Every structure is written in C-alpha cells, then in structure tokens.
Image (cartoon, rainbow, N blue to C red; front, side, top):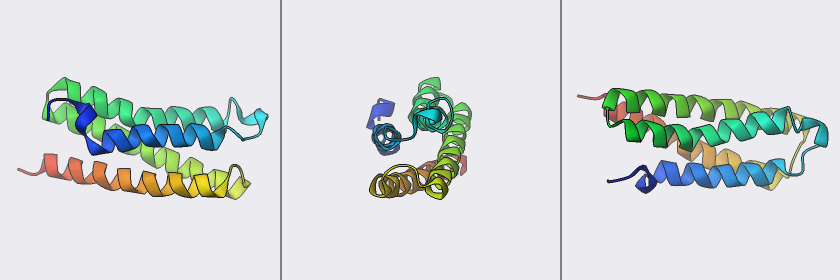
Amino acid sequence: MTTYKELIYWKKSVELVVLVYKFTADFPKEEIYGLISQMRRAVVSIPSNVAEGWTRKNTGEYINFLSISNGSAAELETQLIVTQELNYGKKELRDKCFSLLLEIQKMLTSSINSLRSP
C-alpha cells in the first residue's frame, strides 16, 4: 500500500464519522457542547490517528497511533451506550454506528496484533 487512504479501516472510519454526525444531528440542543461535541471529537480521532501513524513510517509509532485510534473507538462506544440509556437519536442510526464501530475495532486490534508479531 502506498497511502493510508487504501486501508479498509481508515475508509470505514471515515464512513463512521459521517454516520455519527448524522446520528447526533437530532440531539437536544443543550448537548451541543456536551455529548455531541465529545462524540464527534472521538469519532474524528479514529481515522485521524490512523492517518498520522501511517505517515510516520515507523512501525512502533504506527502501532501507538493505532492504539490511540482504538482508544477513541472505545470512548465512542461508551458514548453510544450513554445515548442508548438517554434515548437520544434514531435507533437505526445508533445500531449502524455500533455495527460499523465493532467492525473497525476488530480490524484495528487485528492490525495492532499483526504488527506486534515478529
């Protein structure tokens, strides 16, 4: 591969960004500086850290940035659970977010483990 834009988990992460923005669009306005902001920052962090790590051209640093992406994914997962408890957003969009997020988390974990193997 010649660029991070060819990575499936980067592409799917960008897709998740768009989905989360759509999902949070209908939240109560008092959440604009709360949950909406937190979720959007967390989801944007996922593909951003993949891209930054890829451009470092150092396996150790790349693993570190993939781990940060995975941490942001866990943060987003927690926030999605909170939205479920608060009954915010459309259920079908939340379910799509959960499904795509799980797929991305599996790919990130697999890539990290693969890169750590000798």
